[in-house]
Length: 389
Image (tube, one colour):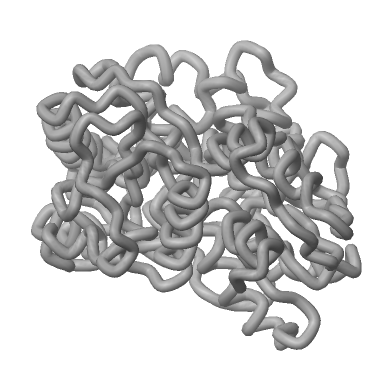
């Protein structure tokens, strides 16, 4: 582990604030919510990593589970009272994972995730040429000097809810006359969740492949469906030779609505909005989706107790969407989030991340709340307001 991280491990005095949002509404760490052991909270994890680096303990199956249970939601960074360590907390956990990966000490689910991506270029073990099939019948042009490249990413290319998101967004962009194209099967995974899981070499390799493709085609501006893609393309790609203007699709929808190129109709329902961690806490983008929802006629937005910087993570970040380290049960953060959404009285839970879509949609079913709450993507809601349900 880098000396920079070693130097701050002993400074955490385990006050416990990292488990809470800044409004102290409830516990906000998904791993702690699930297990209720201090070792699964950021403070306990810091103490264990310190003991490991000092040679006081040896990694075990339990130790590895604790290290890989962090969903990199960033709540601990938001809540930590220690200015000299707060911004490095998640970096420390990722660095520790890198060391475990290099030593071959990883849980089976993580190993299988890495293998799938290394073989296929995506976690779904699908051939690369199938990454564009989500748009097969939409008559979208292959990127060739368009203003924007629309990058779907793995989840929006292969997971059913994510595919619905990508299709809804693309239809709205076409309706608004936006100049955009897709790669028609040339994109590979963005690498963000691999990097967060400690597999930096593979993440860099995939990012470099995307960057080579983007640069070869002359891409200047990119619209991502996933906040995870949005984050890594802004934060990690420049160091690898990929400097692009990167936008999340919610930002482009908000711009088109403000310009009058898209005119939402009436949705006529009360909604609540879930902030994705990699859009909100990681990139401070809290308002584009809310601006779009605010333009829907007859629609009111009911905020959950934990929103914006205090939002409870769906539990899918840090690779858990693919590795399922947190497992199942009522104490999953996704189910707690659905119960919080139900408490608002809203009938629609709006999301703007394909991982959040799947996690929360599954949680609605697990809670038996299908007749009271429906999860829908921002673009789907805008399309429905115009009569295209």
